View 1 (spheres, one colour):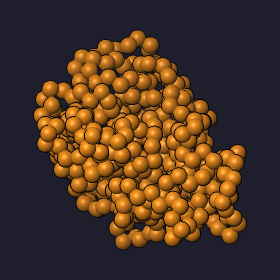
View 2 (cartoon, helix red, strand yellow; view 1 turned 45 degrees about the horizontal axis):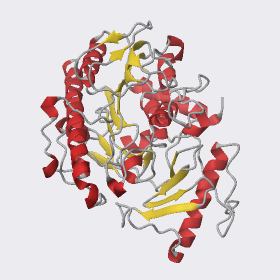
View 3 (tube, helix red, strand yellow; view 1 turned 60 degrees about the horizontal axis):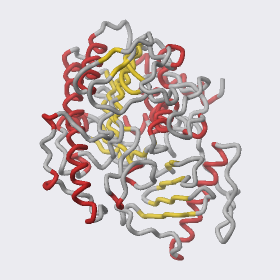
View 4 (tube, one colour; view 1 turned 180 degrees about the vertical axis):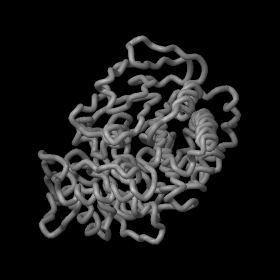
Length: 457
């Protein structure tokens, strides 16, 4: 046992002795971008239950996915490691069994575990039966590997026989979640609810089709030429978001009815964002804020002061070490994420910004890597040549690419050095540096902690 592991285990033991271990309800949506929240300034969306969650918990206003694509992002959330280090560098890839997951740790420590919804860590099988040996410690199982349909879907329990459903998928999945929450449990539970909305197709239930395209406010970086088409997509997108919000309210109510609110950690997030016309683009797997930023709200009434905003950048590789720590569980070695439990639970703590990293398009000509440090953001291509640089405080919509500006050269070189260090520490075979005026920077005098589960310095 390393000294760090010993300290983490001792801290977990102290927490468990002070109070009962909390339950954990982890809700992941698909393609819900970080900007699409009423309290993030989106005046289009009606989402009272998410607003309640933010008022009762902490809202992390600058959360980033480590890879804005389904499979890699989901691998990062459950392992606390960057996707390329666990072999999930593209979509429809199976997560290798040798990697420890948040769910397997909690299972080993006595949690009753349940998974409902889209899994998408077992290859490209659609919808896909996932056998028990590949379920990463989840006992209760009402899920499928892959599907993106909102109505009349299927799921599997413990046999390959599909269970067919009717109606809106998120409705029956919420029914199953409430069923899980109502089951007696001798100890704490961990429920992972994975909902497909607001992923395309943007076809909400009829009762949520009231968003009128002509009344929707577009982000200022959506070109006029695609304004009408974007508003049409947004109407369906927001309808799906509102449908999810209603189901979230049902889950909050179920927790309230069972008297579990104070002792349950509730997390709401997404695997990636969605461009939805910004910069004239649609889809995902892009370093722009609309694709790489995700919502993150955490409520834990017993330990997190309500109504707070945490405004420093957070990565989804931080989820596993942070939540395991809040649950008083052991922290496995080798996680790349940072344990943020201390800064989330103690409002008096102040921290300096730390680097947040992301990647995308790995193994393709469009491969990219990104660092965000404070409000400075640098994106590089497959040869690590800088392609985009922004200051997000002055330029939140990212129209002003500052690569090539002589006034920003020293800042660019410092950020580029950090990307090199990150790659060197998380990959045995970092890419060859670009030829030209920006060669591999000298990082000998710099230091950067990538691994370890301590709060940021």
